[in-house]
Length: 185
Image 1 (cartoon, rainbow, N blue to C red):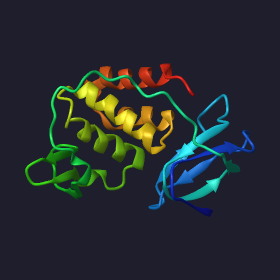
Image 2: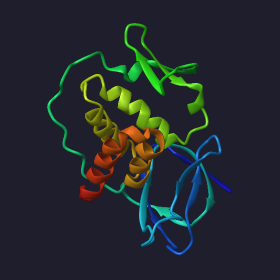
Image 3: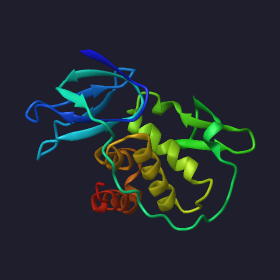
């Protein structure tokens, strides 16, 4: 296992597409894997952060892989941006709640060990509620934030599938379909 520290969003070219790339986050939780993908992944991004590479050979590119952002409607409301709110874990009957008046975001303790793409999807979904009342638009907002941060479409598409309930199948499908239809630059 080798350590990889990135100061910014970085694109990588896979040197051997027949050897899977398996990367863990700073906690040791699986962050990204090319194992399930056919055809093989040739390029991918990683957000800024500290990672541990289990397997795979790849080299940094001059710039990240660019993906088209999902088009969103005009804002439905304008609330205080929660990007500077404290993020906490505790007992929460919901997955995550923003306490707008107190300036913090509370994830349920069950999310402590979740993969980072799932945590960021839920967090950015909550951020999306600062401008969208509608759940599906908050989901799409989260997908765009994740693209901007350096997550790969496969990670973003898997996040709602793994975190939203079965009652949200339409929302899951919307995010995945929008990502599948997005163009690479």
